Amino acid sequence: MNTIVLERPPRLGPLYCAAALRRSTGTTLPERGLRLDGVRVDLAHLAEYDRVCGFRLGDELPATYPHVLAFPLAMALMTAPDFPFPLLGLVHVRNRVEMLRPLRSSDTFSLSVCAEALRPHERGTQLDVVATAAIDSEVVWTDRSTYLHKTSKSRKSEKSQTLEVPDATWCVPRRTGSDYARVSGDRNPIHTSRILARAFGFPATIAHGMWTKARCLAALEGRLPDAYAVEVAFKLPILLPATVGFSASPDRTGWRFAVHDPRTGRPHLAGAIVDPGCAEPGAGGAAGLLRGRDR
Image (cartoon, rainbow, N blue to C red; front, side, top):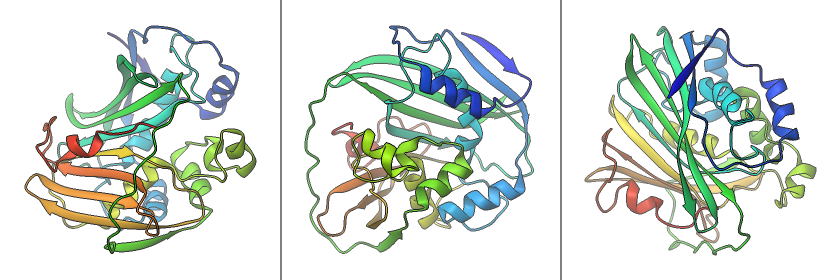
């Protein structure tokens, strides 16, 4: 695969214009990736991300934070003419981050993004957008986002879970969508505009899935090892404003955690924390949690 080295981060404004105009579809993924060297953390931006997602301020980067740094590269890749699907309408169904060692706000690293694993799905086609962070050519962080391009409108109902008392109940205000859009750069209108959210079939704006994942990790701060993998499946969207329940429990592979509607038990997110490199966790790990309906 060819790698194009960028001189500066892509500007998101023109990329959103490109996303809005893109309509055609293809059958192959780009045979190239993008790389940006010399990436440094803006401390004010990190502090705002921590505030929006619920992390404590500190020198170590949350495992989900490099995802927002890599977002402009992913946007540039996914809005290019050789990307097979329009960005609007792609559904983010899964995400796996591997934190191979702590990243600190003082680190300088390279970010790379590519697309791979185009494959059929019962409701359309799936693909993975893979981002990596490297220091002195050593990969220290990876992020695999799975997207679904839907061609079938059939839906499987998401079964309610057994109603249990959650470990915590979170009030998620309406502004969560716009706050996370501002700090992440992900300004998909389903998160920021009630009118446009309805145009895409949602009765209200919805929380970003990566905000929900980050909020879960923030709730587990101080209980995670230096190196781990955290994998989630995004289930039913969180309609804003909302009250959601969070549950987490340790098991033999690490942690299991979930976010659900505390009134009905219907799931919003299911996830697991395991050792890095563990692609097929055993019963109770991420593999079992991630089987099920992709939205």
